[in-house]
Amino acid sequence: MRHLALVLTGALALALTGCGGEESDPADLSVSGAYMPQPVSDMAAGFLTIANKGDRDAELTGVTSDLGEVTVHETVGQSMREVSSLDVPAHGTLVLESGGSHLMFDKLRRKPREGQTVSLTLRFTGHDPIEVELPVKPATYRPTSGN
Ligand code: CU
Image (cartoon, rainbow, N blue to C red; front, side, top):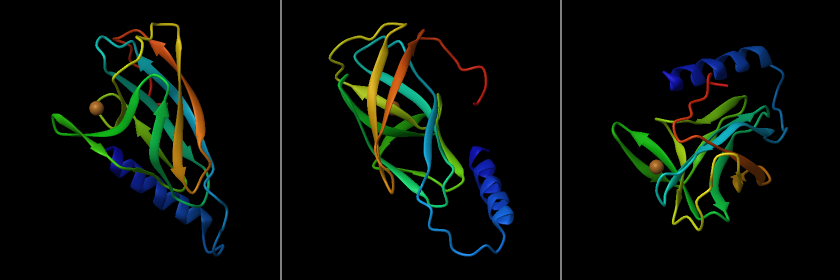
C-alpha cells in the first residue's frame, strides 16, 4: 500500500513539473517524526521519515551513532533483513516505521531511557550527512499519525 502511495506521489509530481526540462537541483532532504522506543534489551529500533523535496533521488547508505552499531533493516513478511541502502525518491519520502523498514541498533553501550535523546548521523549519496536527535519514547509508544 505504501509503495502504491509513493508511486502515485511520484506520478503527480511528474505531472505538475510538466515539460519544464531537466532540473539539476540537488536532493533536498529533511527528517521528521524521529523517535526510539525505550529499549528493553541490548538492541533498539529507530524510526523516522526522510522527505526529499529536490529533483534528484537520494540514497540512505549508512547510519552511525555513539550508542552502538546501526544497520538499516527492511521487513519482509514476518522477518527482517539488513539492506545496504534505501532510496529517498525525488519529491518523495522514505518512511522508517514500526512494522516496516527501520534502523536497528545493536551492541548498545548504554540503555537510553525515556526523555533522553540518541544522536545519529545519516549518510547519503547525493546529499550531505544529516545529524538527527532521536527522542526516546516509552517502549510501547506509537505515533498518532503517519506524519
Ligand atoms: Cu531490525
